[in-house]
Amino acid sequence: MARVEVDDFFCKGCGLCVDVCPVHILELDNAVITAKGYHPAHCIDKDRCTGCASCALMCPDAAITVWR
Image (cartoon, rainbow, N blue to C red; front, side, top):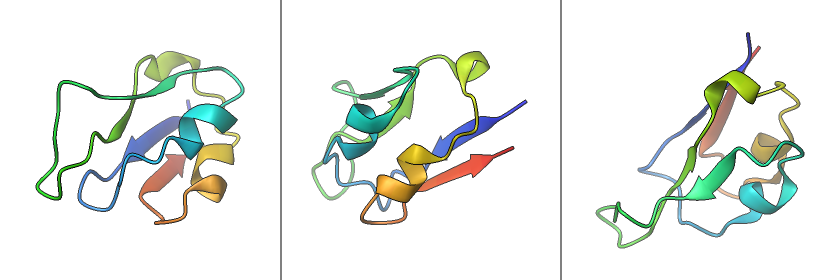
């Protein structure tokens, strides 16, 4: 089963991963603010992750790891 992990330390909340996810399981977490002042992305349904890694490829800060 695939899963996606977002490292809050590196995520700047740009939303590119949210836009590119084909199954729409990523969103910006408006309830969390990182030490740098950003709303990081997070996975809202880990069971639906297909492991395509589009989010990781799109991330400009390499904050996303996809496990297949």
